[in-house]
Length: 396
Ligand SMILES: Cc1cc2nc3c(=O)[nH]c(=O)nc-3n(C[C@H](O)[C@H](O)[C@H](O)COP(=O)(O)OP(=O)(O)OC[C@H]3O[C@@H](n4cnc5c(N)ncnc54)[C@H](O)[C@@H]3O)c2cc1C
Image 1: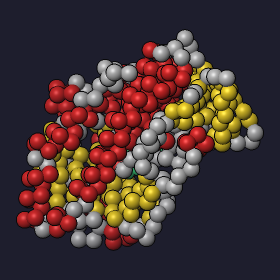
Image 2: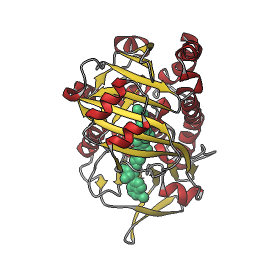
Image 3: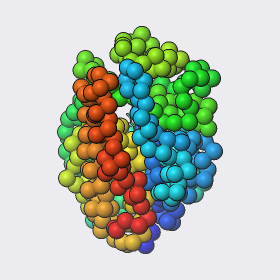
């Protein structure tokens, strides 16, 4: 049975959902508030469970030339620069999980999903249309858009991000919690990155009160920089708020020269306050459901927010395919996803404490701490269940 499905929000999650549903022959319309489709210029890591989901959507092959296969993940100590191998990626990820671990420039991923959606339905994406309300009656959903326009469908997917209007309308308002951390973000042309900084790895610097992540993007043309620092004096959540190199340097005072060199090389730096919400006990109500950050916003410390949104999309499609009835499909989608996404949100919170730990103040303390927290067993316990999650095989 084919349905007409409305999606509020055209970010990575909304586009992935549109593609999953169009692939199965449903009719889809996406309403995105932005007047033009634009992703923030930053990187995103897609672990093997995420590339498996992109493969299921039919876009992984097109993504490969635009992404980087990082060869391994390493951790480095914030002040001395001492490094430890976290795990091998590259060929080993493909051998172990069947799919690669890639790093991608967000605008490239969004454009790829967008192009795949419009190839299947040219008029599917409606820009400059902000969702403001929703009602449902007799198995039909009405989405209200700013300017009094109303559109109707058989189901509504709220993929409208951490400040979701659909979540607010259907499940009530709650206040996002400020985690007391800000993320500094920059994308650096690779020719400006000092030679001694490795280009084929994802590096995770861990320290007291902060951590830094960098990895290559766009077939090695760019380096992504993220510095997450504990700071309670500033709490604006925005992808476009600029900061100065001086302020960023101040936040990384005492950090290794490689970190300072990356900050100095960044053409521009943005700062973003990390906000979150407690996991929801449910996110489907009859013919309306949520997807991605709208239902399970997360700290970035497990690098799974966008991956979860893409996985949600594939599972949502499978549920529509298996259960003809909309309410059943949306209920089963929620049931299939809620436990695994809640576990990841909690895992990311745990990593925040792990990455910013007082034990890392001295090299001796750090050695014992890293040996314990990043032992092979500990890594397998924390990551294996994530990387082996198979969107096409999990029970729905
Ligand atoms: C510093 C940092 C690093 C990260 N690194 C990673 C990583 O390495 N790997 C990973 O998997 N994840 C990562 N994430 C998380 C990831 O960015 C998010 O989880 C992901 O973008 C969520 O996608 P989404 O489509 O659900 O929401 P969004 O990307 O927020 O998209 C929501 C869309 O809805 C639109 N919208 C909002 N309100 C309305 C409305 N009322 N009407 C219509 N449209 C609306 C918005 O304009 C937007 O286009 C990171 C996040 C941060 C902050």
